[in-house]
Amino acid sequence: MQTSGKLLEAFCCFEEILKLDSNYLKSYQNLDNVKNQLIERWHFRMLNDVHRNTVYRNAIGNAISNGHSKVLDIGTGTGLLSLYCAYNGGKDIKACDDAKIMIDVANEVFKLNHLDDKISLINKYSHDLNEDQIGGRVDLVVTETLDSGVFGEGILQTLIHAKEHLLKANGVIIPNRVKLYIAGFECKSIASENVCVNHGFSDLIYLKGHRLVAYSDEPYDTENVRQLKDFKIITKIEEAFECNFNDLDDMKNCLNGSVETKVRLEYERNGFLDGFVMWFSLCLDDNNIIESKPCVNSCWDQTIFKLNHRFANMEKLKYLHVTVSCKEGILNLSHYYNYTGKTFAVSREIIKFINDTAYLNKLEFDIFSGMKERHSRRFDNVLDFSPFPYIGVSLMKEKRAKKLYCSKEAQEFVFFVALCNCIDQDNIVFIDDPVEVLLIPDRFDLIILSLVESLGCVNSIQLANYEILKTNKLKSNGSIIPHKIELWAELIHSQWLNEVGKVVNPEMNDLHITELMNEFSTTNQLNLQSFDHEKLSNPFQLADIQLNDQFSSRLIKLQIKPTNKSINGILYFYKIYVTQGSEPISTRRSYSYIKRACFVFDEFKCINSKATVQFLQNNGVIKCCLR
Image (tube, rainbow, N blue to C red; front, side, top):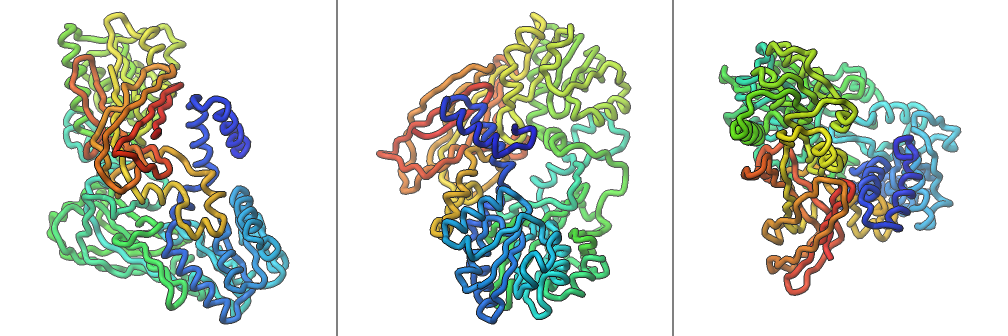
């Protein structure tokens, strides 16, 4: 059902399975995945943003008190802005959204607030509506269909259509206008996910003068830069762009690209230029403003335009010159600071893996030390399912392996590396999953698996099949990597975790939104870098990860730090033993390609500074909670 797109049916099915067997963790994992697909996670941050909600409520109240009482709420989501319209005296309110799940949520919200007879829901995009379908043109359009880069959700196209076809001539749009700001920044943690900063890699793997960059289909990225410890703005901040949403000509000129802003940014400090950061000031009306600048705790992240290298400013430039536009409704930045030589684009996961110098060095040292101990000089077959088969390629290049099996996701780059390093491409086999090798007759001298994904969760398929591969496909004197994985954790309190994963704003409880939306809250927050939290315990070992598909459980009794804070997260990381007898490498370090993750739950108050953690593992899935 999940793979066929029947997400609501899958949601109900996984919930029923867990009622029958709460230890069947595959359903627990699948349920979280379905929730993420059904409801975008940014809904929770927006609903918890008290300032955002307050200024929208105030601006809507101002507009209605000025006689704009016939309203269209575009992209209603949970229906919050429509509720503000109704409670501020709106008389004729229409709300539209294209997402069926959000229409269902909003419908329940309106019923629970006894407003379902005052607010009409329409399951359509606004640009598929005409004035007859909404009972004539409206006095007021309210919307929040904007992303961190303002224009990415099509707000210009949406509001141009509304202005031309749905809004009265003297009607008002909220928000009224937007200004964007820009600055240059330095941040190695951002750069290390975008360009190769491991100079030792190109010393070992010849790339014919090409530089590695991460490919992306998106015009920009987003980051909560306030939480990146190494993020530094290195230029002055300048206004970059402005658009008036109540001026049809201005919106059309922005959309067709005839509005461009040329910006001069003055260097304020030395350092690498890794890209440009932008944020906005959204004026709902003259008195109600939302800002997404880095120093503000907002539900919006900042917009990041990355360079394809670390610009060192060798020419000692005093100013940087950029041009900002939003042709076709996409925020665009043009400049002359990208590397113009030969580049090769790979996935972001490969870039992160290659830049984890400590992990690559650990793999090399432990594996090659083991080869010396066993007096192994050559391998017949190697299976290396790392994001990039670094060890496998090294062995092939040095003629120490005859055949390499690796991930199909890295195929284009591996072929390029093979071409550059005189490796016979006919001796490289690409597969979708390590389990596929069970169907071939070859046995392996060396198997390298990625049992932990870069997001911080275990790879349940590889984990569940580890023992099968070891038993059936490994030669008697062969090695399977890693040998062992320990799961470690800290108990924490984090208000930020609360706000990104579930609705905690008391106002939403009063409006009956909390109970409906929190059905879709998840329990495992992945891909965490630095974030605001307080540690309530020392690091402790949760368990040795079982390298099979069997059920296991463990209770850990802890003494925690005296505090009046409650626990709402188990922040976890891994210690990976590459080979038997080797020292572990921890994923709890700067620039690890494996990020941290956190099991999140309702606030838990400890008695006498004691806590008990339950660890569960089943079918290659792990789960932790407090008892």
